[in-house]
Image 1 (cartoon, rainbow, N blue to C red):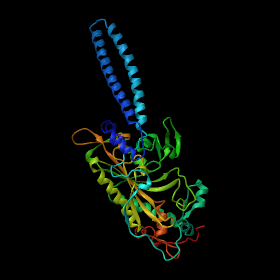
Image 2 (cartoon, helix red, strand yellow):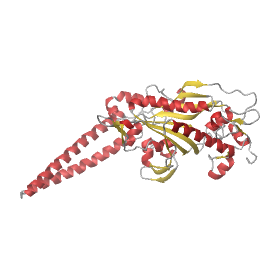
Image 3 (cartoon, rainbow, N blue to C red):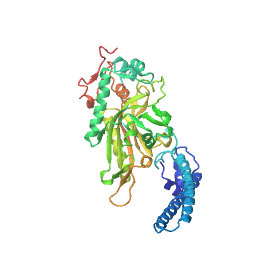
Length: 429
């Protein structure tokens, strides 16, 4: 949620930042609404104070045996005024919140304006693979080697689902083990969160109310999805400390989680969408940090470095891209994507988004830290895929394929696949 004080004190800055996302709203009108809200809130506080004083007088007079009829009438009148003022305050608060809730985070100053056409490549690492033979695409490789059973996955779950088998399942599990072990070794606490979350979790993450139609809803409530399948572990992890105030000395809090992710995705038949590139369920290891605002930028770079290192250790050619404002998730102020090269598509595909929400999610979830001295304040939240596998597996298959139709397994994964090569299984059909 955007800081209301910032809107009051720097209206032009907020307007310009939202314009980078092509968001144009009546902030002047909101400030008039906010002014009314603050005036009525002051009036409610005054009336409550007056009623308390009168109630005290009534008790005092009654103990002294004096007639308090006049005070009772005054208390009744104050009660009616207070009820009316509180009703008005509730109305203004609801209108105020309805305006703020859909607003996205303000992009950082160095985030380009506009859509994905303005994304900026920060760096490119390694060389694009060159083949002395006609390479296969990831779908053909996965079928030939018996790694992914697309047809039976569809039979079980419908369109947008697949089934890992044999060495394919081993490859998937090897990646997940490799990622989790690397992050735990470096001080991240391992978490296995629920896969079913409540509306409050979606609201804190910034998923609701605007993007409620993008999740698999299990139970509808008055506000929206009361229970839903988590779209990413970030939605769970950001809520670990919802409505909590953490001692400053405990920051940063660093977590790593593994979950399947459940999303409504519009798939297609193009190579860029086939196979495991886009589906309703996929596996991901997620990193999350709660940190002090002063350490926020350094934490962002650290998370990016972690995701990038994992891709590099898998011997993949990749690039780092800074997303433009409209291509950045609404809850985030800044995002880097780690993108691997997919030869069959002739393009890069994202395998990790590394994002800083600043205090946007913390405000929505009332997540604070308390310094040694002074008042509590909102902390910053950051997340990174570390990594998602559904696009990583296609890149591994395509970049590491060999002329004989087999696929070399990166050294980092050979602990789980000792043969070091993916070959067709006899029972792959």
